[in-house]
Image 1: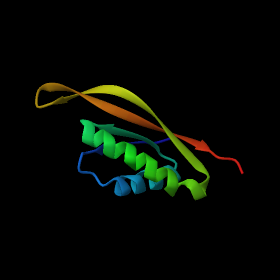
Image 2 (image 1 turned 30 degrees about the vertical axis):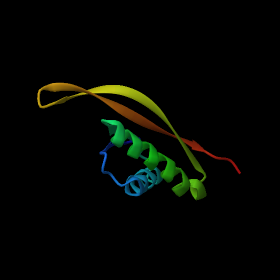
Image 3 (image 1 turned 180 degrees about the vertical axis):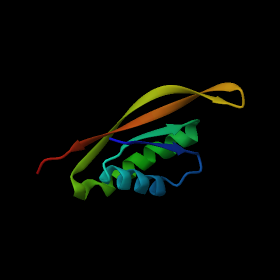
Length: 92
């Protein structure tokens, strides 16, 4: 499956990010999200929570696996969180 990386900022709108998650999952894409800093991690987790409700009628359940990663920004190594979104078909 194609992989889509969403970069989430502290000022990202969680409902908008949730819509992107849901629409891309419906298209069969795998999603990972990258967030740096507490506000962006908060917005990313809110977006996953909201997208779960968007996908309820599609009988798709979401969970995520957090991972640490490092990015090179302006010559400096920065830590970030990658949230790998996992999908599960719900029966019934």
